[in-house]
Image 1: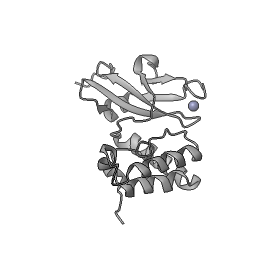
Image 2: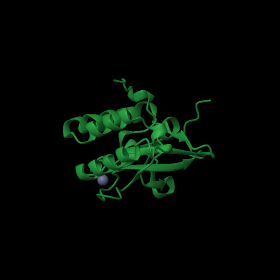
Image 3: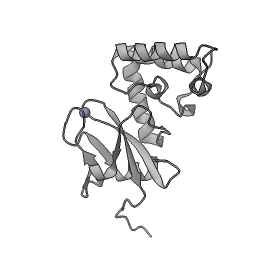
Image 4: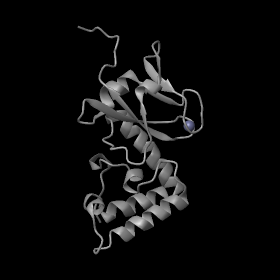
Length: 169
Ligand SMILES: [Zn+2]
């Protein structure tokens, strides 16, 4: 059994199983089944070379168990908040930071959730943007953020000209 250290994984379990964070149990099962079939030695393609079956099984086991899933979601949120997360955003809808409203007093960017519509469901602090984005190799950065109400994840693309007011120098 391979021990999987979440810090070493560049993809979330959702990305491993090619489902979004709101996928139902049935959707997760269907996608897992499809992926398992695609890992048959006769059909092994690019996907499998980057995603061990062990990891797929671990991801599946976690996401179909409501308790484990809740724990995983929480740890994923913590991981992202603490150190950023090198996600390639598979399965996530992408938004531009220009779709967010900038709240200058609180130094954060907010937008209502595209799924549950709650106002300011998605919040990105300047600190988050400055420290936790993942470079896309083209001068842009990607960061993912979760709705505080319905837990939907989205990916946000932004460029460096985020102005911070601090003039520490
Ligand atoms: Zn929401």
